[in-house]
Image (cartoon, rainbow, N blue to C red):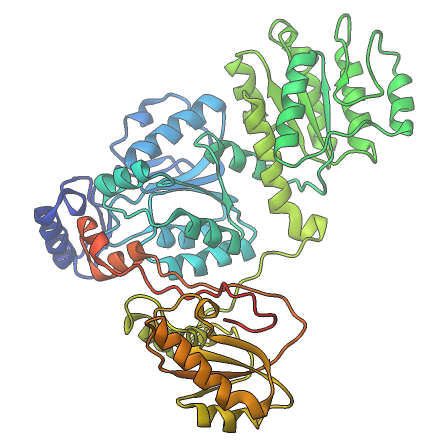
Length: 542
């Protein structure tokens, strides 16, 4: 295909990098044969464009009669999961724009797809199903671009357990990596991590509505107390508040003359016996206008199945007028009501936990512009020279770095330590101390000693005249403990500050991806150096 000028190809077949040594040889041969031609796959089911009704896929989910176009794009490293999400979205009335299964990512990978979707005018939210990242640095850049473009990333990342990580390796050859590193990365790029598979569709559905959540205060209006309690409890567990209405709101609700209703507490129990849709519209309008609330959750109870017009009708009619988010929790099993409301732009849920999770995600997505919360900060990316210098330090050493080497590494990332001088002998330490103002901190350099204070290797507030003698005492104590002293550190004394422990860990799975190491070889690779301080030395990085 490449020889006749094809620009791209989708490789559906499996049996490549995920299947062992022979598969990896086939993988390399495929890459070589493609040349400059772009590849999607192998081991993929292709892609689907619901906006333009184009399907380049072998998924059986395409046989579903009603596939709803919409603003949510899905990128999945699993073809089967892509088909599952497509069918689930159709069943819930959730509209999708583009769906892409990247498979083994011999060429086109997740970051390429996100980059394309940032520029796609039909996509407003991007959902990702990840087993691992082959190029975290590039993913960071495109994720930050997505955030800057106002296109939220919602990510469901598998491999949180050891079993899940093993399954990911055998599935697409993706090494899952240490999960807490992904957590940190997703926070830094303002991505939202879905806690459950269901959230991967339902959170994007909530974000796609275009409304911001300005605060944590949620009004719950219901005709069924049990379902309302479920939603209130779920909201509390994710950090949302369900406060009672203010007096002005109570007065406006009371003026509606709703019989047998509890209007001065939240959830707001509105009995629908004999109620008219117009009355329910007035309740929604009153709560939406209330200064007590930032969002409204309407609960459809069992009576909503027999008479869906009482709740669903007023909700749909109220939606264009509202500025605050309006969610619906459908308590009975009523997929037709859920699908109908979602298709018309009302985020609707069949589980109280999903409703609360979506509200919490919307609050987080809205925070920088609506609540005034500053977005998470991280250190600026290293330039190429600094990156090479930092990685040279990492790769040159197996095991623990000592304090000097650790701080040299941190400096490449913009983290500075206290003023200090590295010396080899007690006499040099005495001379170095004379350049400081006042007393100093003296430490031994002894590789492999995690806690220098345990062997008398740290002295705080040492007078300049006493430095050489203190170094000789430290050296003798360390030698008695079997430690090899390589020198000394003389540091400025900082008497007020915050004690910190710094550590550096390079994910071995990421190294394996870059180096082409087999999954079974992961345990033979150094986990990467970690240097920490545990000594309680005020103001001095140990």
